[in-house]
Length: 404
Image (cartoon, rainbow, N blue to C red; front, top):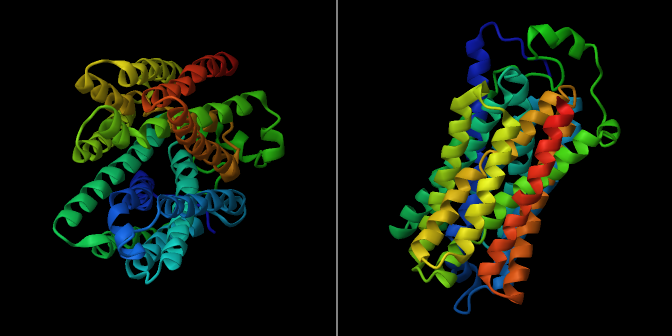
């Protein structure tokens, strides 16, 4: 793959914006399924419907593809370049939407969802290093904007799915309706040159010194104490997001006593709040210390989690849960940004490792919430999510001191 040497800043800006759009396409695959679980249960399970285990298996196949895509893309992107995987991720998303729309059986639907997750994993892994290299002077800004478009995509997907479900378009029609986005993005990216994962795009004062260094192998990175703490921090950042997001609709319905549509709306508003938080960080730019910003975000998240779990007024509790999307929004992308600043020659493998750890946190915390809820109740299950941002605070402050 040829390296990206834009003739103007407009070319780099175009590729950055296409990455933002690709983050929206990635979000389709990860947020469409929950809207249609009831319809899929009837369509593929007959009168009896699919069991809850079978419905849960659909999400598991999608997530398995996501993790596989992340793990294989990192080291290969360092060798073969970013462009191949940016294109493959979008093409796989489009092909999977078509396969999901026309899947004739439950087994083939599982395979299509795995493929969707695979495309999402490739895209998720490769977009952050591309945007990081293209915006070396404003990584925190650019990466928060990038990840805000995941939330924009979630809002779009949930909104489109809800509307199409209400007018009878259904699962297949919705998949086909959303299919053009990744195809258009792949077509627009195809003629562009992409950056290499090390050296290109670094500001002029540092370009020569960074370019002279070989990519830092993972075997060296994982022996650096700062990087190990960054991996733990992004695990907790992913846990902070997912602990609330995965359980909020059910919590609103079963524990706070709201109707089902309020549960769905609360998740939509949670995504809107997360979008707003990341965009505000993006607009604030370098005026904010990223470590201080993350520490405050963690602190407020702890308070909001506990208010959401135990406040006696249901409306206040629900608003606190939604607001936690805003306070926790910066944790994942900003951890990526400060780590890329610390190790600019870490390459795509570094981003792959961080993305894998963040998603691992997204698996662990919803499972832990469910386990605590079975043991006690969902109020306590949700409250346990506050442990993640609480533990993250001293890690962030240590990273700030160690970097200084």
